[in-house]
Every structure is written in C-alpha cells, then in structure tokens.
Image (tube, rainbow, N blue to C red; front, side):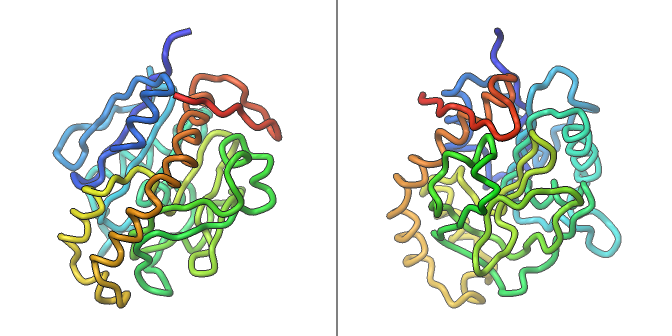
Length: 255
C-alpha cells in the first residue's frame, strides 16, 4: 500500500504545519504543501489526495464587508465541502476548523469572552469515546490557544467532541472523516514566540503578558506532543483507509 498523500493548506506564513507536519510524515504520510498565503494556487479538486489538512491564520473565517478575508477562501471552502462529501480525511486547525464549520453551514463570530491565548485544557465529550481520533485522548488534553474568533454554531449534523467553559465548540467531527479543532497542536516555541512578537493587541485585551504566556506554553510542550503526536498518526491511518469504523477506535501509531 502506498503512503497516503495529504494536501496541506497554509493560510498564514506564521502558521505552517510545523510539528504536526513532522508527526504526519513520521506516521507515513506524503505531504503536498500549498502556501496559499504566498500566492500558490489551490488545486481545482482533491483528485490524487487521500487527505486534506487546513492550517490556521490571523484572518477571520467569515466574510468581511461582503468579501472573503483572503482571496483563496472560496476555493478552500469548496475543497472542504468536496472532502466531506467524498469522505476524504480532513483536519482543520484553528482557522482551518473555523473554515470547515463555515463551509458546511456553521457560524464563526468574534469570541464572546474575548481572545483565548496560551496553554489550556479542553474536555472530551462522552461521545468522543467512540471517535476514531479522540477515543484514545485523555479526558482533558493540553492544547495551545491563540484566537479571537470562535465557532458559535456547528454545521448541521456535526458531532461535538470537546469543549471548555470559555469556548463551547473546541473540537467537532462532520461525517466520519472530517475533524475541526478550535485550538492549536502544531506549534513549537519559536512559532508561539513569533505570534507574541507580532501580536496586534490581543494579549493586552486579554490582560496577558507575552513572557508569562510563552512560559506556560513551554511548560506543556512535552504533554502536547505525548497526546497529539499519536493523534496525528491516527489521522494518517484514517487517510490510508485503515481501521475506520463507527465506534471502533484506531490503534495508536508510534513513529
């Protein structure tokens, strides 16, 4: 069996696949990265790809003044709809998760509680115990948060997999092969430091200082890897067509 080929869409130069990309490759995936933020064109469709991974970015997922926040978003939304319709394994991270929700009829809006930034815990919902990717996660996994918008309405038929007191919709699944995450799992410390350095007021709005946020993120880096590296491996297993079944968790794949 050949390695699954994943289309990875980069929406922002400061949020490449980073550690998530390394974990996907370690699990046997071949990555085709499109730097849409740099003007590289998205494919017309997903022919030849076994999976779609959409990364984060500073843009809003929703239209602004009647126009998409980035010119490639209409095509990206079309690819996300195609992926769900054709059961192509899909993972959206932060903005990517918001775009997945938006493309399928959900709603994304400015976060009611303001920016969520730093190291946090999210909590699995009971239904996550039968999810191929989430079943083997601990009840409250560590994640990184850095967003000013949130998914306020999930797409029709979506299954809520993780939540938190601050943001209700932290992770969801649409169909049996498409997952959206509100949080980040891909970050290393230089990436987080670059976000803090270029912050345009979100830290101040949240009453946070960069040094404290970065120290707390560094403290959970090993825990994030312990949980989300095998998660990436399970996503590759879904993309390759191995072990997918409702209510049947996939095995942990160690690099």
